[in-house]
Image 1 (cartoon, rainbow, N blue to C red):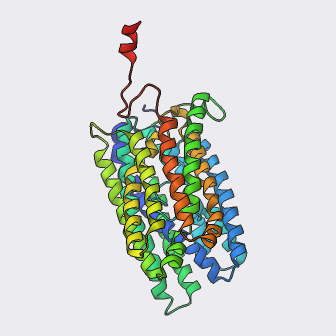
Image 2: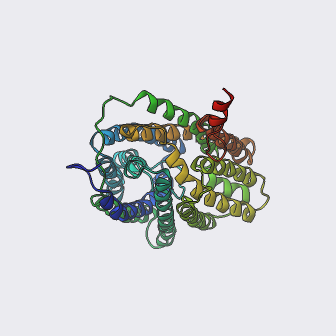
Image 3: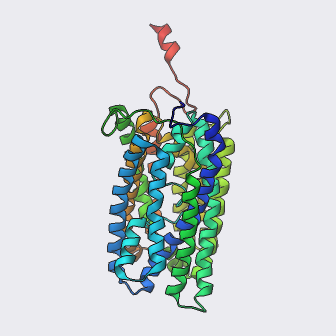
Length: 418
């Protein structure tokens, strides 16, 4: 697949380390801003209602941007889409570091797309990243291996993003909280800048010529099935995870320092899970679809366990185990999500799937209400939906006449019976 614009497989393999570096730098900056921005807005004395409205606009803008960058990548290359997309958080962090002007802060929050779940993979994936990996490596096990390495590196780097928030608390004893936030926004901007520079050294195989305005019918049908399964899962995650730090605080009376330490351990656990996924991808018994489905359901079981836990130590331990499972399953889901998509549609399809995931997270608006009614209910309901989402994922995406190990059944036997 070489061309005047494409790279050889050796070049693609050789420059993968630059992509890993980009994901590590990006994770440090993005994890900090994701954890910090609601606290920063509150420190600037924005009301909770105003902050909620800002987050709604952030999600809306981010949905449009993801779709545009996905289609852009299909036509000109995913590397270029990644580079263009990296300018948005970089510009946002620079604005946040330079000014507390209300218009600059809100503009920065919107264009930076800083809303989301502050999980270990928050900074790892951006518009074009999944499509780039699937386009550069054609074997599903090779893809899972690469996604596993990205997950491991990005999640490990997320620990340092959480540490920046801890340093903010220390620095706030000497300067104002607002100025401490601005200082670390500047530090985060530097890390995102390093991510941008690293992307220029990444090589990409030539993209096939785009022959449709949006995507092929076959690609749409497969993507639609993935979206249906992911919406159920995303709705459950939206109820359970965005307010999880607050839930820990209210349920067990623990302080933010202890919660911050828990998140750092969870990021390390996700990193280990990504490493396990990268190593196990070439096992003879490995099935990407089964791994993607069952790990998602086990993550839902963990949420139910957290809901029923009488002590913070037990809930925290379950959360860490859940993060490990997330790291193991995410690489397989990234590969399976584009398994049935045509090569010219990777960007558009991955963006459409990403948009569906983001939109389903708007269910987080129910979380506060559910907490007010019954504290365990967000975790319990979210967990039940994720269990169902994992089983639905397997049911919808499993090819016909294929058993649990991915082996076709009935072909030769049916032929003989005729």
